[in-house]
Image (cartoon, rainbow, N blue to C red):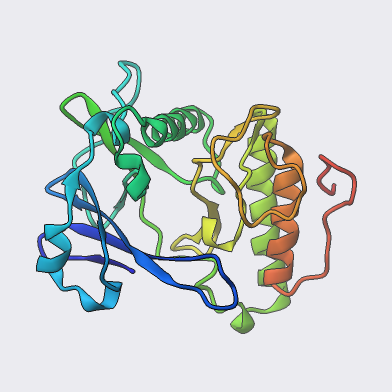
Length: 264
Protein backbone atom coordinates (compact mmCIF):
# COMPACT_ATOMS: atom_id res chain seq x y z
CA UNK A 1 0.00 0.00 0.00
CA UNK A 2 1.46 3.36 -1.07
CA UNK A 3 0.07 6.77 -0.14
CA UNK A 4 1.01 10.42 0.25
CA UNK A 5 -0.17 12.77 2.99
CA UNK A 6 -1.24 16.39 2.58
CA UNK A 7 2.21 17.67 3.61
CA UNK A 8 3.89 15.69 0.82
CA UNK A 9 5.21 12.85 2.97
CA UNK A 10 5.27 9.50 1.17
CA UNK A 11 4.64 6.13 2.78
CA UNK A 12 4.92 2.55 1.56
CA UNK A 13 3.53 -0.36 3.59
CA UNK A 14 4.28 -3.98 2.61
CA UNK A 15 2.79 -6.93 4.48
CA UNK A 16 5.20 -9.84 4.96
CA UNK A 17 3.83 -13.39 4.83
CA UNK A 18 5.43 -16.79 5.26
CA UNK A 19 6.13 -18.72 2.07
CA UNK A 20 3.92 -21.64 3.08
CA UNK A 21 1.54 -21.85 0.10
CA UNK A 22 -0.93 -24.05 1.93
CA UNK A 23 -1.38 -21.84 4.98
CA UNK A 24 0.60 -18.57 4.72
CA UNK A 25 1.14 -16.78 8.02
CA UNK A 26 1.27 -13.02 8.53
CA UNK A 27 4.73 -12.00 9.77
CA UNK A 28 4.38 -8.23 10.02
CA UNK A 29 4.35 -5.03 7.97
CA UNK A 30 7.48 -3.33 6.66
CA UNK A 31 7.21 0.45 6.37
CA UNK A 32 9.35 2.88 4.38
CA UNK A 33 8.76 6.61 4.18
CA UNK A 34 10.04 9.99 3.06
CA UNK A 35 9.18 12.72 5.58
CA UNK A 36 10.57 16.25 5.13
CA UNK A 37 12.95 14.82 2.55
CA UNK A 38 14.43 12.29 4.97
CA UNK A 39 14.22 8.50 4.65
CA UNK A 40 12.71 6.33 7.38
CA UNK A 41 11.97 2.63 7.82
CA UNK A 42 10.23 0.49 10.39
CA UNK A 43 8.42 -2.74 11.13
CA UNK A 44 5.01 -3.31 12.72
CA UNK A 45 3.22 -6.42 13.93
CA UNK A 46 -0.09 -4.89 12.77
CA UNK A 47 -1.76 -5.35 9.40
CA UNK A 48 -1.29 -2.44 6.99
CA UNK A 49 -5.00 -1.61 6.88
CA UNK A 50 -5.26 -1.46 10.67
CA UNK A 51 -2.81 1.44 11.12
CA UNK A 52 -3.50 5.16 10.85
CA UNK A 53 -0.85 7.83 10.23
CA UNK A 54 0.03 8.15 13.91
CA UNK A 55 0.50 4.39 14.22
CA UNK A 56 2.79 4.33 11.20
CA UNK A 57 4.95 7.21 12.46
CA UNK A 58 5.67 5.56 15.80
CA UNK A 59 7.42 2.64 14.12
CA UNK A 60 9.76 4.71 11.97
CA UNK A 61 13.49 5.10 12.53
CA UNK A 62 15.85 7.20 10.37
CA UNK A 63 17.70 5.47 7.54
CA UNK A 64 21.35 6.58 7.22
CA UNK A 65 21.51 9.26 4.53
CA UNK A 66 24.46 7.61 2.79
CA UNK A 67 22.43 4.40 2.37
CA UNK A 68 19.84 6.08 0.16
CA UNK A 69 21.21 9.29 -1.31
CA UNK A 70 24.51 9.21 -3.25
CA UNK A 71 26.98 12.08 -3.33
CA UNK A 72 26.44 14.43 -6.27
CA UNK A 73 29.29 14.24 -8.82
CA UNK A 74 30.64 17.61 -9.92
CA UNK A 75 29.87 16.98 -13.60
CA UNK A 76 26.21 15.98 -13.15
CA UNK A 77 23.37 18.35 -14.03
CA UNK A 78 21.56 20.24 -11.26
CA UNK A 79 17.81 20.20 -11.89
CA UNK A 80 15.85 23.42 -12.44
CA UNK A 81 13.27 24.59 -9.93
CA UNK A 82 10.46 22.05 -9.63
CA UNK A 83 7.32 22.70 -11.69
CA UNK A 84 4.56 20.23 -10.81
CA UNK A 85 2.89 20.68 -14.20
CA UNK A 86 6.04 19.67 -16.09
CA UNK A 87 8.22 17.64 -13.76
CA UNK A 88 8.10 14.24 -12.08
CA UNK A 89 10.46 13.67 -9.15
CA UNK A 90 11.83 10.14 -8.90
CA UNK A 91 13.06 9.21 -5.43
CA UNK A 92 15.23 6.18 -4.63
CA UNK A 93 13.27 3.02 -3.85
CA UNK A 94 14.34 1.26 -0.67
CA UNK A 95 13.16 -1.46 1.70
CA UNK A 96 13.18 -2.11 5.43
CA UNK A 97 16.41 -4.10 5.08
CA UNK A 98 18.18 -1.11 3.51
CA UNK A 99 18.18 0.68 6.87
CA UNK A 100 21.24 -1.19 8.14
CA UNK A 101 24.40 0.95 8.52
CA UNK A 102 26.86 0.55 5.66
CA UNK A 103 24.30 -0.83 3.20
CA UNK A 104 24.70 1.59 0.27
CA UNK A 105 23.16 -0.62 -2.44
CA UNK A 106 20.21 1.75 -3.00
CA UNK A 107 22.48 4.80 -3.22
CA UNK A 108 24.77 2.96 -5.64
CA UNK A 109 21.84 2.02 -7.90
CA UNK A 110 20.43 5.55 -7.79
CA UNK A 111 23.79 7.05 -8.74
CA UNK A 112 24.07 4.58 -11.61
CA UNK A 113 20.62 5.52 -12.92
CA UNK A 114 21.55 9.20 -12.76
CA UNK A 115 24.74 8.45 -14.72
CA UNK A 116 22.75 6.65 -17.43
CA UNK A 117 20.31 9.55 -17.68
CA UNK A 118 23.18 12.02 -17.90
CA UNK A 119 24.51 10.07 -20.89
CA UNK A 120 21.09 9.87 -22.53
CA UNK A 121 20.70 13.62 -22.04
CA UNK A 122 23.65 14.02 -24.40
CA UNK A 123 22.10 11.54 -26.86
CA UNK A 124 18.34 12.30 -26.77
CA UNK A 125 15.62 10.37 -28.55
CA UNK A 126 11.85 11.06 -28.67
CA UNK A 127 11.11 7.55 -27.36
CA UNK A 128 13.41 7.96 -24.33
CA UNK A 129 12.41 9.81 -21.15
CA UNK A 130 13.39 13.47 -20.90
CA UNK A 131 15.71 14.07 -17.94
CA UNK A 132 16.32 17.54 -16.48
CA UNK A 133 18.89 16.84 -13.76
CA UNK A 134 19.38 15.96 -10.09
CA UNK A 135 17.80 17.52 -7.02
CA UNK A 136 20.62 18.05 -4.52
CA UNK A 137 20.42 18.45 -0.76
CA UNK A 138 23.51 18.60 1.47
CA UNK A 139 25.66 17.56 -1.51
CA UNK A 140 23.61 14.39 -2.09
CA UNK A 141 21.17 13.43 -4.86
CA UNK A 142 17.68 13.10 -3.39
CA UNK A 143 15.59 12.98 -6.58
CA UNK A 144 15.90 12.75 -10.34
CA UNK A 145 13.82 15.33 -12.21
CA UNK A 146 12.08 13.83 -15.24
CA UNK A 147 9.40 15.00 -17.61
CA UNK A 148 5.88 14.29 -16.36
CA UNK A 149 3.79 12.08 -18.65
CA UNK A 150 -0.01 11.64 -18.46
CA UNK A 151 -0.10 7.84 -18.18
CA UNK A 152 1.71 4.57 -18.72
CA UNK A 153 1.20 2.04 -21.47
CA UNK A 154 -0.47 -0.19 -18.88
CA UNK A 155 -3.07 2.51 -18.26
CA UNK A 156 -3.77 3.03 -21.95
CA UNK A 157 -7.00 1.45 -23.15
CA UNK A 158 -5.53 -0.12 -26.26
CA UNK A 159 -8.85 -1.79 -27.07
CA UNK A 160 -10.03 1.62 -28.26
CA UNK A 161 -7.06 2.00 -30.62
CA UNK A 162 -7.10 0.92 -34.26
CA UNK A 163 -4.51 -1.61 -35.41
CA UNK A 164 -2.42 1.08 -37.09
CA UNK A 165 -2.03 3.09 -33.86
CA UNK A 166 -1.12 0.01 -31.82
CA UNK A 167 1.45 -0.90 -34.44
CA UNK A 168 2.86 2.63 -34.33
CA UNK A 169 3.19 2.44 -30.55
CA UNK A 170 5.13 -0.78 -30.86
CA UNK A 171 7.38 0.58 -33.63
CA UNK A 172 8.20 3.74 -31.68
CA UNK A 173 9.14 1.63 -28.65
CA UNK A 174 11.41 -0.41 -30.90
CA UNK A 175 13.00 2.81 -32.17
CA UNK A 176 13.85 3.77 -28.60
CA UNK A 177 15.36 0.36 -27.89
CA UNK A 178 17.41 0.53 -31.10
CA UNK A 179 18.74 3.90 -29.95
CA UNK A 180 19.79 2.44 -26.59
CA UNK A 181 21.47 -0.49 -28.30
CA UNK A 182 23.37 1.87 -30.62
CA UNK A 183 24.90 3.36 -27.46
CA UNK A 184 25.90 -0.10 -26.23
CA UNK A 185 23.17 -0.13 -23.58
CA UNK A 186 20.36 -2.54 -22.77
CA UNK A 187 17.32 -1.40 -20.78
CA UNK A 188 16.84 -4.89 -19.26
CA UNK A 189 13.40 -4.13 -17.78
CA UNK A 190 11.16 -3.26 -20.72
CA UNK A 191 7.48 -3.82 -19.86
CA UNK A 192 4.19 -1.88 -20.16
CA UNK A 193 4.68 -0.23 -16.75
CA UNK A 194 8.03 1.19 -17.90
CA UNK A 195 6.61 2.84 -21.01
CA UNK A 196 4.76 6.14 -20.64
CA UNK A 197 2.55 7.89 -23.19
CA UNK A 198 3.24 11.57 -23.83
CA UNK A 199 0.74 14.32 -24.63
CA UNK A 200 1.00 13.53 -28.34
CA UNK A 201 0.33 9.83 -27.86
CA UNK A 202 3.94 8.75 -28.41
CA UNK A 203 5.41 6.02 -26.19
CA UNK A 204 8.39 6.97 -24.04
CA UNK A 205 10.64 4.43 -22.32
CA UNK A 206 11.26 5.21 -18.63
CA UNK A 207 12.84 3.62 -15.53
CA UNK A 208 16.55 3.17 -16.24
CA UNK A 209 17.70 1.67 -12.93
CA UNK A 210 18.44 -1.65 -14.68
CA UNK A 211 20.00 -0.08 -17.80
CA UNK A 212 23.63 -1.13 -18.27
CA UNK A 213 26.26 -1.60 -20.99
CA UNK A 214 26.09 -5.01 -22.65
CA UNK A 215 27.75 -7.73 -20.58
CA UNK A 216 27.84 -5.92 -17.25
CA UNK A 217 26.32 -7.67 -14.19
CA UNK A 218 22.80 -6.52 -13.41
CA UNK A 219 22.54 -4.57 -10.18
CA UNK A 220 18.87 -5.47 -9.68
CA UNK A 221 16.73 -8.49 -10.38
CA UNK A 222 14.38 -8.39 -13.35
CA UNK A 223 11.42 -10.55 -12.22
CA UNK A 224 9.26 -10.25 -15.36
CA UNK A 225 11.88 -11.86 -17.61
CA UNK A 226 11.45 -15.56 -18.29
CA UNK A 227 15.06 -16.09 -19.42
CA UNK A 228 17.08 -18.58 -17.37
CA UNK A 229 20.13 -16.30 -17.18
CA UNK A 230 19.38 -12.66 -16.48
CA UNK A 231 22.52 -11.93 -14.48
CA UNK A 232 24.16 -9.89 -17.28
CA UNK A 233 22.93 -6.91 -19.27
CA UNK A 234 21.92 -8.18 -22.70
CA UNK A 235 19.98 -6.94 -25.73
CA UNK A 236 17.97 -10.17 -25.64
CA UNK A 237 16.23 -8.96 -22.48
CA UNK A 238 14.85 -6.02 -24.45
CA UNK A 239 13.74 -8.35 -27.25
CA UNK A 240 11.82 -10.41 -24.74
CA UNK A 241 10.33 -7.23 -23.29
CA UNK A 242 9.29 -6.09 -26.77
CA UNK A 243 7.64 -9.46 -27.40
CA UNK A 244 5.67 -9.04 -24.18
CA UNK A 245 4.57 -5.57 -25.28
CA UNK A 246 3.45 -6.97 -28.65
CA UNK A 247 1.31 -9.44 -26.72
CA UNK A 248 -0.01 -6.66 -24.46
CA UNK A 249 -1.01 -4.64 -27.55
CA UNK A 250 -2.65 -7.70 -29.14
CA UNK A 251 -0.24 -7.63 -32.05
CA UNK A 252 1.17 -10.60 -33.91
CA UNK A 253 4.76 -11.45 -32.84
CA UNK A 254 7.25 -9.49 -34.92
CA UNK A 255 10.54 -9.83 -33.02
CA UNK A 256 13.03 -12.20 -34.64
CA UNK A 257 13.99 -15.29 -32.65
CA UNK A 258 17.72 -14.77 -33.10
CA UNK A 259 19.33 -13.58 -29.85
CA UNK A 260 20.33 -9.94 -29.93
CA UNK A 261 18.50 -9.18 -33.18
CA UNK A 262 15.65 -6.78 -33.79
CA UNK A 263 13.60 -7.03 -37.00
CA UNK A 264 14.50 -4.75 -39.87
